[in-house]
Amino acid sequence: MLDSKDFQKIVESVSTPILVARPIFDGENEISDFEVLFVNPAFSKKIPSSFIKEGDSFSMLEPKIGSEIQWKEVAARILKSKNPESKTVYSSVLSFWMRLSISSTDDGLLILSITDVSEEKMREQQLRRQNTRLASLTDEISVSTESLRAKLEKIEKLNLELEQVANVDALTGLKKERSFERDLTLAISSGEKSAVIFAALDNLKSVNDSKGREAGDEIICRTAEILVRFQKEDIKIYRGSGDSFLILVTDFADKKYLSSITEAMLAECNESGIEFSAGIAFYPEDSDSISGLVKAAEKASAQAKKSGKNKICLFSES
Image 1 (cartoon, rainbow, N blue to C red):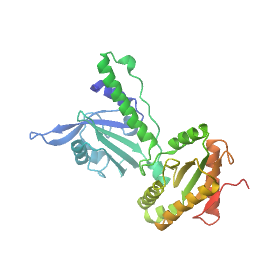
Image 2 (cartoon, helix red, strand yellow):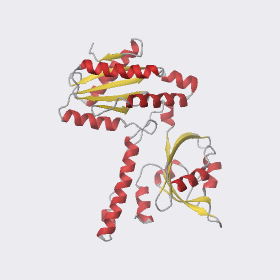
Image 3 (cartoon, rainbow, N blue to C red):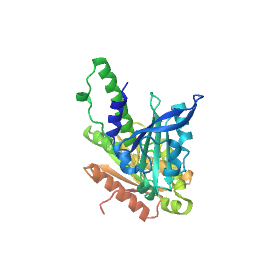
């Protein structure tokens, strides 16, 4: 098990703003509040110390950061259930949208990370997160072999969790473009026949403007649920930026198969009142590079929108 100093070093190396707190118990051994043990440099940079600092209690968070979330109650629930939670709220005090990810450790500590998602909210929930890396602690650890192995396993577990955050879209649960690029590169290097479908939702902006972004998010989630039904070994679904989805198809017979698969996806979405314009590009006929292939599929999708929306177009140079 990592000691508090090792754990703090790991947290401080992470680029995501993170706060670590411990529960405060009353005379009846019930959680009465939470005390902030430490925050990493990224947190201090994002949230000024005049709002929250080491030694402050969670009961002080509401007036300083915002009452949009019941900080103490949520923290106590997570600590008791051991189930992490993620919430997106707007802080009227700090004047930006934030995604709060809250979890607990085996030692009974609470970990709170805050991500500013204001730009993503303004761009139809375009979720971007950067991958974080942990600095090697090998040279700093001078303990027995057995203890060293336990610490390295703990570090590896945290690294995997952070990698998951960087690669998985929080809204839909789909893998992000980074995973798409890796999988397409692997397929091409393995000599597999490959094609990319770029599916852009139609009229999402008008839904966001008329009904609010929560309604737009619901459409994105429903679309993801439908597309995942088609996922199998040779068909993989990814969340693109904004209102788009990327679909990687490999080991297919011919172009007709790609068109029929895309038409089936579109039909399923239409039954749920969802429309999208899709473009299809083939490797290496339409481009011999990953970025070029995606651009070709995106261009074909734009042509589908231009020709009336809710359609499918194959990429053409003309």
